[in-house]
Image (cartoon, rainbow, N blue to C red; front, side, top):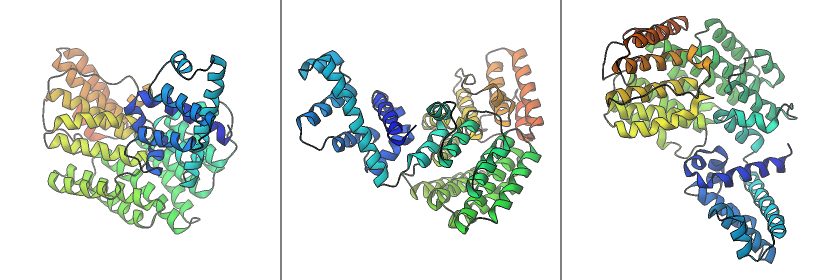
Length: 431
């Protein structure tokens, strides 16, 4: 797919999302446009983009602009718009094609002027929340550039395709190490000590061939992989050490601002796990204030989860439940956050004596992980509340078995304690 074809594809897709404001606001391409054009929301950014596309005061430009505004923003029918503009259907569709091309050209100019390369930032962002769409963009073809191949490799991981470590050898040292760390997330999900250790060893070796900023970025990713693994094991002392490593690496790393923000959120989570809610709230507030419009999805989904968990711990269940909906975006790039967020949804439903059951979105492989076991453990409590004691016991026992197999002892203990109806388990079973 050539560059303009990509912009045409994204222009059509974003215009179709105008009628879905929430989806539009969460779309990484729309977020990039919003920030590039300094707009309050994604719809305003699209409107500004349309204005930029039709700056010429020619009759054709006026017709094309009207078609976009009437069809895509006001959602008027083809028949109504062609009649209002006194166009035959053939003329209408000819102008329509030209109008979309003009908006796509404007998008390309805006992203290029603000140094936002769709082949890097945008495709990688898309692979984090909608990997299937990235794979569909390229079909079965092998992408021509290394940047595109990297985005596709991330998308394959996000789509739960098999991990093939040797694929990382096709990239430069930095991308290869980054891809291996993404693979390490899959090993962490299943408690695969050998897999995680192998990934860490490769990352350490790659760091010797990198400049300082990229070396610290890889060190940051390695520390976070080990932090999340320690968290699932219930080893808060190790979590604290790796959180400190996150902070040190973030200071000099490529992408410093987003990594510092993430490290600040990790500090807030650690304090919440220790029961220091006031300190956690201050740390989270400071972290979010450092980069309020940062576009990295991996930072925002983590921030959303910790904010939701804090709200629930503070008794603001309504806000927590609203935030939890957004952690569903993490299924591809951070299944651990998706799983913990989804389990928290179930815990809050229990609090309010409401029905709940696990989402059907995750693939079956998810439920064979630590976090799938956590979700199932919460579901067992719901089944018990609904009076299905036999099924509750079976689900709890399966969840405990998965948790033990994946080396998540606190999840296993939480699953086996399904008969308990504690109301203070917002951060459980990691606290």
